[in-house]
Length: 184
Image (cartoon, rainbow, N blue to C red; front, side, top):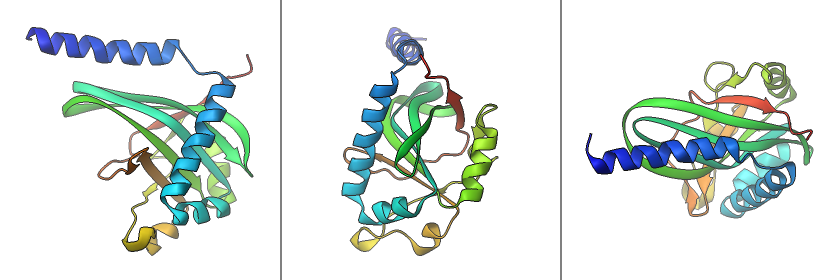
């Protein structure tokens, strides 16, 4: 392993270890969730319309992904039900394959009916796995910023975005979402 690879690997490992050590406070998460949703809704009125109909919205304002061959991602967020915080969660996943670098993104998962939200809530302590416990339809925007009509009909719709816009060729599959204890 050359020196540059060792340095990059050490940096990525430090990034993920610091993410765990410097867990955000409830107030920091709430502020990030509001900012992330505002960003998404400014980018897409269709997302805003869908959000208004959702039984619950799980928002991760900052998910950091990185790797060199072996990678991982981690982020903290909150579940909003009727616009109010109903709980705090983290998302984490690992991967193996060709990958190099670090990426930061935001995620929003909209539970479009009470049945899917209840199913998520029943799994929250053991961890809810995207693609296993619920299939998340990744939203893509067509002409005029409109959602694909088939995606908009799905029971769980997810958005992956950044300050620069919606991101493509990404997935929620393999992400494990677990409830955080933020009573402190």
